[in-house]
Length: 281
Image 1 (cartoon, helix red, strand yellow):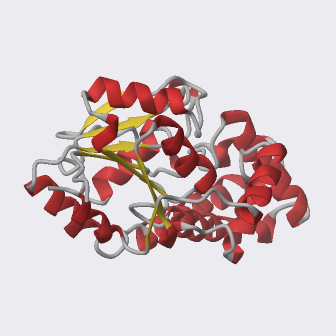
Image 2 (cartoon, rainbow, N blue to C red):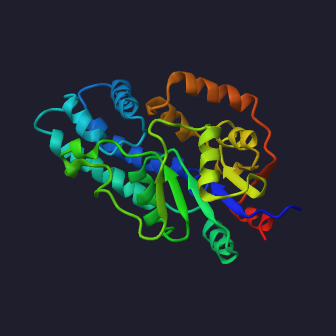
């Protein structure tokens, strides 16, 4: 078996359960908002989706600030309700954010072998770096590639920020920006990452949970594609509410549903992240 020398991995739903973190946080927030909202649930969800699409992310830190500006809540209750909604979101995130079983052990084994570990994610820097810190991966991951942030300087009310804190910086892991607006699958971006870190595509492994975004991209670039089957969440009930409020365009949602019926065939399928270790010297 060919031994590999570089690991590039997706982050969300590959190293940790992003859908669980998102849904736990979002539903806790929604539970605080619904009782006092002046509009039906469907209209509230449409307003949320509009904000997500405007900013190109389904976890926009200042969602509550923009929702509040839409006058969906009574004036006398608005600030209090949004503050509690933010606290609900933060508690949900804190209770659900954890690595998949075996991930930390596998990453540490790879580091002990001197294997470069690279994250390539679509999540914006402020969310990605915060999770790397909270998951105690700063220094275990060598480099993380993610898109730049929103214009956070334009935001004012930290009391109803979903983050609960400002931007946090990594101490050991290096952060490098992807071009703004670029999404997966993008073979050219993956090729650029491989070239920048000085890796050989023939001995590089790419791991991700999405046949459409990860596997097909890795195959086009010519690296070993590995499907993290344990991270696939499209059939879980909570994924449907994500589709309802996501920043994804409708065409992408339908494309994903279509691809679920005719998935790309992965070269390697794993049911635990630990399985990647045996491919490295």
